[in-house]
Image: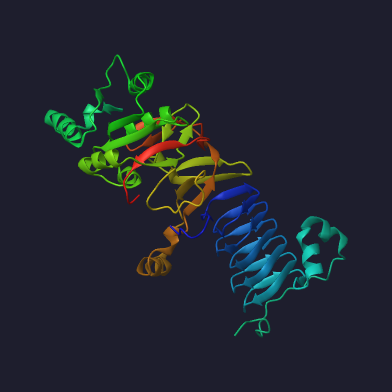
Length: 143
Length: 251
């Protein structure tokens, strides 16, 4: 059992509601609701999340249907599937990952403030054209 | 000043009671020695000790006597001590020793910590862990303040203190649930077993919370070791108040 993570959602576990943690969260199961951490969120290959994910650093190897807001870094691994808009100061999308949505950088302070108001901001912002990025050429891969 | 309650079931032989009494006398911390019976249970003995103005109630035995005394002393100024006899390793770790002579020495040095305990809604407390008595994988629902968790669990442990779990907050319980992870077939299964069975650990969950409600389809016992503390459905929470517990120097 990993002890350096505050909360771990195991495979075949279903969580409904809002999971808010000061410490890190690891997800291997299913979540319907908001996942929010002051630290890191690690979304494993077997994980499925329907809802927003908000944290300092987020690593996605599973599926997320919802907005992702990483105040520091978002890493979308090759098995990762994201259907929703993403906001991150630093973004890494690896070859094979699926991303359908729009991405924005939250590096400027004004933008960061806006992005923290997640649900309201989504309605106000004009919807960008969806892009399916399979990144076959590895443009977004970090070497 | 010391009020001792012996759990005679945990004494290997009758002479052990005399040995402990003699050793306590040699340390200068003798006191009143009592034994639960059909007429007077552990809780009633604690009340008697408190009414006689003893400032330290000491359990001599294992997890059951420790938990039952702790439940009565929570939020009180009187301290609790324990001389462990067949106590769980977690309880021994909490008080700093599994050896009854060392524990007796610790009583004399009187180093006191203030600690929370876990409490079930029926008023039973626990210093270390509660385990859901699951013989087979069972549908379990855990209801926390902001979310609900459902799984087919093989084990559920609610921990107030456990050596294997890093506690993140003194007033939080740690809930560890294991459930059945899907088996990989053929070559994948071979690889998985060769490289440490990662799939198995994927079935582990951990949650931290002040309180939770446990539900199962049919009633299931909540055990500490081999004694029943409560049954599902049950509310379990961290105590609001502290217990003053005598521990070893290194704890």
